[in-house]
Image (tube, rainbow over all chains, first blue to last red; front, side, top):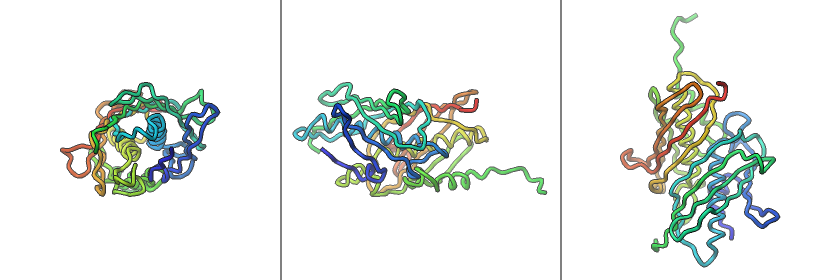
Length: 130
Length: 144
């Protein structure tokens, strides 16, 4: 299932799968994601983490269950400066309930063992019909 | 030689910063500032929405707006531009921004230690009394 948002397109996000079939979204480096000179902007990293979290959640829900996904909140923690190269991200759904999903997303560059940022993301699943 | 004291022109400085990189991509602009706070604006842009059907602004640009506004509030409070990095930033999305509306992000630095700056802020889409998001977070001074 691929639902590329205008925001994801503007950011140049690329979807792929790792060898275990998990969704990986990558963000190529460019002026559009630049923060302080030589580093990726923290806001661009947050956008990448959030995008991979929502896409992973949409995949897990499948074609037959499409509640409206409403962002509740997100906490991003920055661990290393993200350098002028491609950043990758993937997400793990810690709990998928009827009304709330708790997701953790992680972003890295060269080495998945050395994350540049992680995020805890809570999403409301609205099935009220609007 | 002028004996006038150096006047830090925050508006001009911020407008220079927003003309580059990711801040330019989301269209961030200077809006207002005070001794320890800063406001930036992002005009509505259909290329930044999360879903073309609803036209609702994606949360990524709001996060960037708040990161930038809170970050600048620290420089305004300290009066110096020292290198700093976001340690963490939490955002609560109270409601979606109305399609077509400019979003204003207000960032405030409320406490500083030798190594850490504590910030908070909120965003609204026209009425400051009806915020769309709240943030809280910390930055650390990388040179300290």
